[in-house]
Image: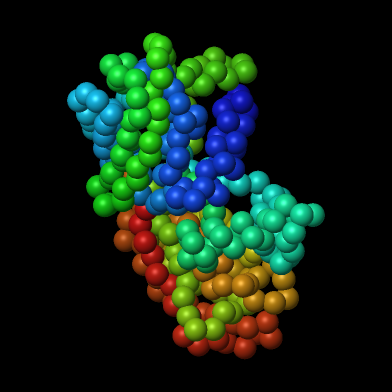
Amino acid sequence: MINRILLLFSMIALTQLLGCAGTKTFPNAVRAGDTASVALGWQKKFLPHNTTVTITPETGVPVTLLPNDPAIRAIINLYPDPVSYMVVGTETLQDGGFFNYGKTYGDMVNNVFTDKDKDWYQTVAFIDMPASLPSGNTTIELTNDDGETASSMIEIIEGSGAPALFSAESNGPLTRTQMSSMERAFSYEVICSGETIPAAVEMTISHDAGTVYVVNPRGDLKNLNWTDDGSTLKVHMISTTLDSPSHIKDFKFYIAGGYRYMSLQLVEVQEVKAYDRDGIEVPGVVASIVSN
């Protein structure tokens, strides 16, 4: 139903993930009233319900969109193709023209933007520009309740625009609900740390009653198996190769789900054990949980 809009999203992710600042608009010029997409960089907390957008024209009065304003159409995380040159080149340590310098760009993302976290994505906001904006360079600034900020410049050109319909092939224009269904659900990010990178990690996590869903953001780097009995989650992760992953952050995963229309609560790590490729326990590996 939504393959056309997903194609658009993929194009934006490609052009924006490698941007010098990661905060650009696409397109970079629109009419007043048109819809613009704004790349926010590698962000974790931006959602329509907690985001304020301030649109400041070169001349004239700034316009503020408060959280949940209908003009904030959606804020969605976009991922690169898992078989892209950037992913394959980075993991096989191959670069140059044959790999379209994928390792060079992958290293750029790892070292400059994500601090070795290979859960690569670009957060993009789709915003309807106010119809009252005058022509000229216009600044779009987004802030959220968690203190994240991002800003971008867009040119408002002559003419009267209209919000994008995001038309699908068989179901007509996408509704706001359909757009928001692609936004990130409330989740917990589980991150491992330690001096030695293990080949396998297992952990036990407790939580209030609820239905759990565990997400492995990089299945090419590690296998992840999990079971849950309604209050205790057990997770087993092992590198997909005989060697340990390149960084201990590769053992990251997400916990989502809920109970009776509420997110999971009281999610706590109870035990963590790590092992090398020979099954010998690796000391000092711990896990932390951050709510998103």
